[in-house]
Length: 211
Image (cartoon, rainbow, N blue to C red; front, side, top):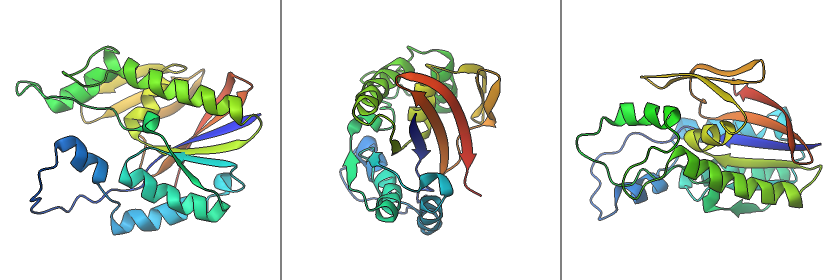
């Protein structure tokens, strides 16, 4: 049995004032750091019983994911592997007429919806799936932690799960077989989706919140 932990990064810092740079929205998003509370929660996350004796750690290229992963790496004495395959979805160029909240929900309802130069649900699912297949092939019967992002994780899970509901205020309900994983919510920061594989076959998914 191979265990894959898809982990949403810890709480990011939202207290920004003046940002006197030439960075694009995308670059600013990638550079977002954890808040002080987020650092404390990341440390607590790393001590969770499920994240002991991890064989390999992967993260997206985003700073908040890397900052979350460093505690898991330190606790398990592992190197940090980084792959842009686990990056958050690229929003691309916004049309000023687009309601961003509605777009967020509609990407769950419409798998091919995307902005100009952006990514759809299917685009994200494909890149994540390809990388996970590679990891599963190389790490059979191991425990792997992947620290990334809410939409990135949930888009991937929709390959296996049923979307019951997606409404404004980011109220999602997602089911795997007869098990409700998320109900009227999103993944908390941080939290864990535990996936159990028998070779390439997904056997079970469990959602674990960090209390």
